[in-house]
Length: 296
Image 1 (cartoon, rainbow, N blue to C red):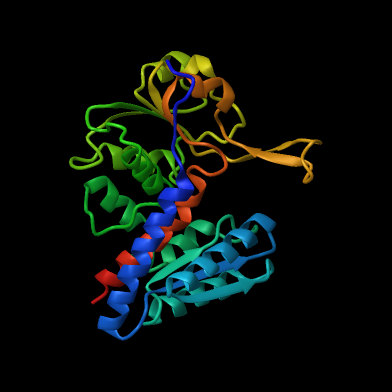
Image 2: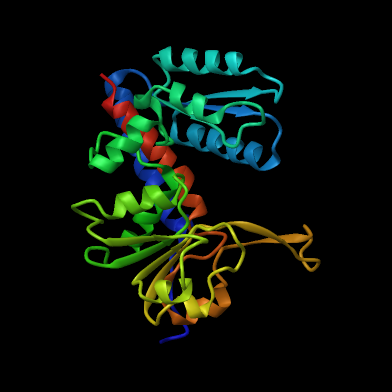
């Protein structure tokens, strides 16, 4: 296999998606007399969550969306948080609601997700939207990271129909949702999907049977050359911080895939950073626009 695989550029793909969203949003805003609206709720002071929320707010404004941001102390009560969600559910200017995860203890994250109006659940985690994904009901919302993974496969020209996909990781955020998405009937789907995890037997052999490997296991450099057959496509969802004294920050970000070792075996591969990461916010904006379009 060539040592020069196709590098799947998530930044370029996300830029195109956001440009499309901006054009559609302007047209719909002119027709309806208001722009799409996204509300983001941040509880506590987690630095990564705070940076992510700032990025979402900035992207909303760049696209001409109405942006609402609630920054709340970690000491907020469950009742107070649910009251804010209820007010956002009732706000006619808000089409999408996202409560940034993880929530500080002892807040009940599941109860908060259940409280969001499913028609505004642009994260796609409400049971109604999970059920719609399982049923193939396209009116529901698919979680943003799996949706971004699917788009990158399409953009890279990777055949999905009939392909064997091994997804490493079984979280609802990525693994389960991506499996449901790729096994749907129709465009950009029709795959045969195996969901593997830490208790799966002989993971290297299982992964080598795949045309497409998606790594979402949350362990730095877990996927090695022995996991990937020649000519496979690899999507690396992981983002892990490892110590690196040579970096001015004292650390660097790496994926779940040992990139330098795996890339020469691949037809196509996503880098970290710059692969799946930028797609998450792009698909969030796309989901918000979809919610706006579907509102009566």
